[in-house]
Image (cartoon, rainbow, N blue to C red; front, side):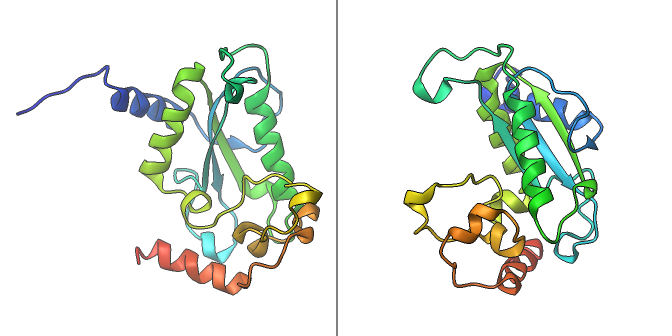
Length: 191
């Protein structure tokens, strides 16, 4: 049987993902801040060999920025908070701190959404594009866990791209950057 429901949850998520990807990729970080929560993609166009040929149409990372109070169960609204812009700023700072990445090699797309669609759009984008920093190299979106949690292991991302000062305080993960690169190549070959 052929059925189609344009208002199904899955289709609404795909619509938001398509709308985001129709925008041209722009320099990371946008030149002016903006209000709202939503979803975004980061794209790598530089020369780091493990990321070769990703380009502007394949995200290396997909993320979301929820409005303030959402995790505490407060009614979410897409108010004047610049949470999406600030999330992009945070990522730009992480990339700039890495010893082997250059901010000029990154592009981004973003889409301000009603908060009810943010998580769904992120989920659809990750499932569709399988971005390396979401599904193969863990830790890009991490924040400083704080002094009381420095017994945690350093992320794969921080092992491969050292430079975030707080990550040096974390425990060694027991794998080298070459190990992480081997994981990336295995993922890219579909192993």
